[in-house]
Amino acid sequence: MKKIILTALSIFTLVSCQTNDAYEDLNRDPKNPTQVDASFLFTSATKSLVDQMTSTNVNTNIFRMLGQHWTETTYVDEANYDFNTRNITNAHWSEMYRDVILDLATAKENTEATPVTASFTQETKDTRKAQIEILSVYAWANLVETFGDVPYSQALDPGKYVLPVYDDAATVYADLFTRLNAAIPAITNDGFGAADPIYGGTASAWKKFGNSLKLRMGIRVIDVAAMSATAQAAITTAISGGVFTSNADNASMAYSNASPNTNPVWVDLVQSGRSDFVAANTLVDFMNNLADPRRAVFFKQNLGAGVYKGGTYGAVSSFTTNTQLGDKVYDPTNPASLIDYAEVSFYLADAAERSISGTPALAAGFYNNGVTASFDDWGATGVIAYLANPNVNYLTAPGSWKVKIGNQLWLAMHNRGYEAWTAWRTYDMPGFNLPAVSGLPVPTRYTYPISEQNLNKTNYTAASTAIGGDKQTTKVFWDKF
Image 1 (cartoon, rainbow, N blue to C red):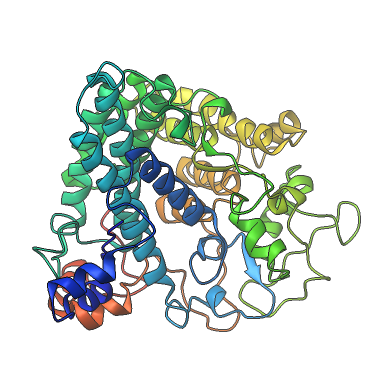
Image 2: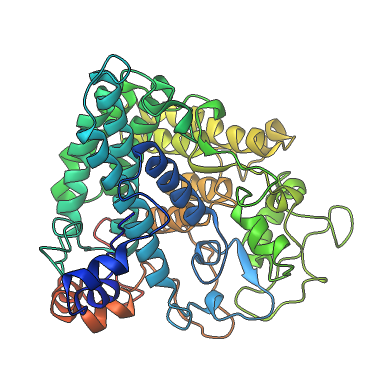
C-alpha cells in the first residue's frame, strides 16, 4: 500500500527523492496490494484513534499528566510540561494526520470508487462514508482543540501542497459542524458492519455518537461570540436528534487479553514492566475532601484500607509509598471510550444552565446523571450518599455552576486524560497545582511540532502569529476564560 506521511518532515523526505521511481519505491510495500479494502482501513484508523487517545506512553500521550490525574515516579519531565525532549507534540500530530485522518480519507476514496451492486447498495455506501466522516470530524476537532490553527484545506494533497498552509481554527471548526450535519442523517444501515470495532455497524448507535460529538463541539465553542449561533444550533439539533442516554451508548472499543489487541495502557505499564505512575495529589486530595467512594476503584488501597495519598504533582515520587492506580486501569481488556454518557450528561447540564435546551432547573438532574454514570461505569457504590454530600449536591456545592459541572466532569474523566485536561480548560475550575520542578503554568495547548517549525517555516510562522504565539500558554480560540 502506498502511504504518504503528512508531516512536513516526512513530505520533505519524500520529495527529496531524485526520481519518480525512487518516490514510488519508498512508498510501495512489496508484500501488500496497492489498494487496501476500505473496511481494513476503517478498522485500522478507528483502532489508531482510540489507541492514541488511550495510551499513556510518555512518547505519545501525556494527557493524564496535563489533566493532573496522574504523576510520574522517576522521570518527571512530562509532568513538568517538557513537550520537546521526547517530541511528544509531533507524535500526536503525526498519529492523528497519518494513521487516522489519512487512512479514513483513503477509506472514503475506496468506498466512493466501489460500484453499487445488489450486495453493496447505495445505502451501504452512504452509511460507510458517514461513519468515516464522524470519525474524521472527531480527529480534526481534536487537532484544532489541541493545537489551534492547523493544516486542513491543503493537508491531504501532498502532491500539490508539499508544505500546507494552516487554516484558521474557528473556520475549520465551523466546517466540521457542516460535515457532521450532513453525515448523521446519511446513516441508514450497518455500513461497515463487523469491521466497525465500536458499534458493529449499528445505525442508531452511530447517530447517537454523531449527535453526542456535535453536542460536545457546540459546548466547546459556545462562548465564542462569532460562533454563538452556530454553537446553539449544534447543541439543539444534537439533543433533538438523540444523544447518549446510558452507558450502553458509549463510543467504546473493546480490547482483548491477547496482543496486539490489548488496551495500550496495559502495554505501557504491565507488558513493559514499568512502575512509572501514581495517582497525583491534585486528584487524590480533591477526592479525599469529598470522601469520594470512587477512590476504591480508581485507586489501589496499597497504603492500607481507605488510605489514599497522591504523589506530589511533578516531583519524583515513590511508587510504593503513594497511592497506585486501580486494577481496572491495568486490565488488558479494559474498554476505552472516545465519548461517554457521563460526559454527555454534564454537557446537557451546561446547555440547561444556559437555557439553550431546557431551563436551569433541569441542570441538577443532568449533573446527577453524569455522576451516576461515572459510578456505574467504574462499578463503584455509594452514589446516592455521595450526591447528598453538601459539597457535591448541585444546589449546595461551592462555586458557580461552571465550577460544579467542571469539577465533576473532571473527576468522571478519570483514565481519559485528554477530556480531563479539556474539562479544566473549558470550565476553569480552581485547584490545579504547579509542577514541583519547573513551576510552569498548566498548558492550554500543545505547541507545534519541531518538524513544522524547521521544514514548514513560512506557514508555521504565519500560524504562530495568528494564534498569538506558539506557546504552551496561548489559549485556543474557544478557551475564553
